[in-house]
Image 1 (spheres, rainbow, N blue to C red):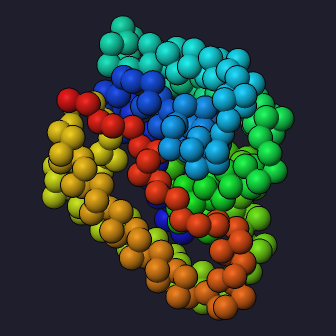
Image 2: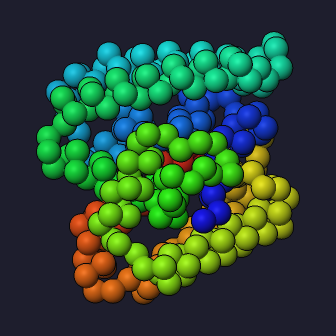
Length: 252
């Protein structure tokens, strides 16, 4: 299956320089929903995070904020040096360690129902990538261990036939093609429209079109599943969550 581009390229090339945008980069690395829960109000409300739980998560939240600042200082538009791949990989490893620490903190602080709902949203956030083969190297950044585990879990649960996999692959490729066309027509190129310097109204219009394309494709995906698979899929992802609530607001 064609790899669905993540927001990493946008952060590096569009001059993103906010903590929210640093969180976007975490999406490219996996465990994004866990990380976003630390500060995203909509996500906190969805799983009913309490004040006491926020207090327990405060140490790791502060550590994540510190990392976000370090990353923006190193790779944001005000960075003195150019892009340093070696330093970037060091930061990526550091984030992977922090992601593991965040997960441990959440496992200790959240209830079983909260962890279940958070996992459901995490599967939704992976979009069509959830159906990829974790053992086949992607065209973009390598899969994280968390992403691979999620793909394996969904693959084992749904047991898609070769015909179904072909249908899903076709839908994913169609979404990629249509999304690229929408961005190009809006003069946003192949980048996800979420960077600093872009017109917020244009970004909102493009996002609305992209959301429409994805939603229509997901309807077709569910149509390709048999009744047993549909039931299993519903149990895996739960009720749809508005993923647009995880997007940072673009600034001019």
